[in-house]
Image (cartoon, rainbow, N blue to C red; front, side, top):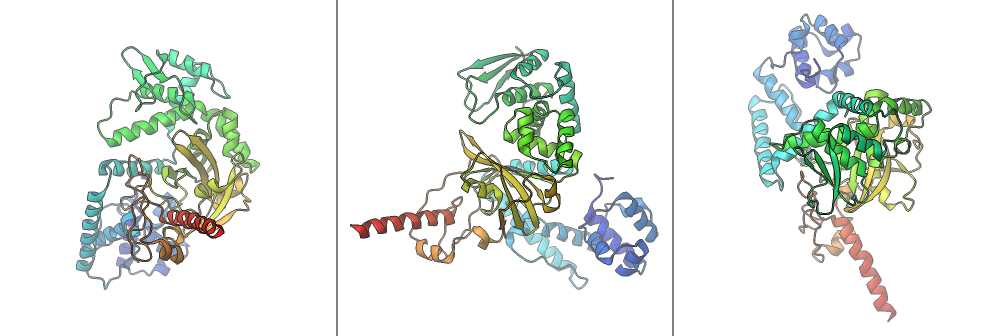
Length: 495
């Protein structure tokens, strides 16, 4: 039922059945023993019901569960209203900064059809302007939604990892390089470190000769075990050359997931995490240290296990020092910045989020904890910085304030407010800086090499109406110029 349950469609059907039965919102709520506000949320598709509640609603409305859950709208009007609600909840509509159009009985069908047609044409324009393949962007957005539905937990891959570890006699603790090599041998592969591996590859597997080629020197900040395990995962899962972006992304997620499940086995990690939760001492650092993995691997595995086994919704962010999102996952309703097609990678994180604030902290050894008041609520985050050959990245794991109590560092003394995606939060320069430097600055943007996203969206117009280059953080550029011009003026005055 979960796969077929559409809260928006079911909510509209409940409203229609209630009206047909001549019941007011308050009367039906009284029959169910619930508050009218709760039932209103249900009818508006903003709350999903449990099976027992659905049965009670069907009985109160004089129908059966199958009819209540039917996905077919009961009328053309209902179909239009559902389509409009979905359109107004889309990233494209949110990016327009418009107030949602209230759906009332007095609103003509033709008006709804016109709005839907305009939004459809606008979406086509955005697709045509996309700087990277639109199919990849859509596939990435769909994959993120799928992982969200599963709580970022893949049962089949956890079982595969457990079977492989049992085959090589690994019973717990960090997975040594010797055991990883034993696993490769168990699967019939030999390992070869070479100096001429193609620059575009991290590893290369010869399936015919059962040989895995790895670079002689590991990439800075990368665990050499992960590279080999990901190559082995591709062979174990029988990945073939991907035919499209969807299969390419799915294979990448599966390989990374299985490698992480081998490095941090579920069987031993879950008891460790549950014990830490009981002590209210959950931390990514402890998971990292217990299994001798990178912080990024520990953070990923925490998101794999936290919702499924600890009941904690979480989010994860990997953000380049420029502020650009490299990876993201959430099931705690935090609102990531996204483009009109829902793509998150390549977008710029608010400068008040922990993922950006951590770069200003001098102590890069200790974890950084922060509370952030966002439009969707207050969230707690822990962040750490990883230095790689491609620059520094912040790695952040967070959750809603209600679940922060289970974590070490929940009493963070750092607290900031973010109103993004409101442009005035941090996207546009302060008026004085804009007036001072608009038309007097010509920055050269550092192009974003993200596979999925267009260049990070900068405000197309500054406060004074001058255009700016896409991908350039105008505020930072103006602050840089102001800071250095002041130094130059002071030097000139002292001569």
